[in-house]
Image (cartoon, rainbow, N blue to C red):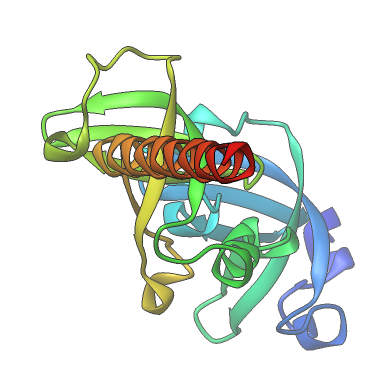
Length: 205
């Protein structure tokens, strides 16, 4: 009798050990462009689609995962008949988009560090929220450089895409707002000085 036969088929009673929404620890055993394979136990392996690896957009799973690495995963689906388990790494972590949607709105001011320059604009990491935003070329004022910190205004956060997340930002709008605020302060200062001058003039009379 082989060791494998003596041990039994781990998929026969898989529901006794794993259920949808369970959070378990596994080991990364393979990485492909579409995602990563994670071994939950000997003979039981699940798959993490690339969209379920991180709340941030990634091009390759190998950017943040390594073979042999232990990771926490949430079970999304169990297909016992076809011996498939769909897993998620990002859902074991706090969703930063939920916080962003609560705390940020159109015209909110944030800071972002340029992570990637693409043809249509720049991808920035939004400080304090651990998520990414996008600044289109027509909303950039300065020459983009990786690592550069920009002051930005939120143009839009798409609530319908919370699981993927989408935030559109503008450096141009920030500068416009800054100029308007400076102008208002200047007008208020001049008005205040004029009022004090009129008061002194009246007292002098």
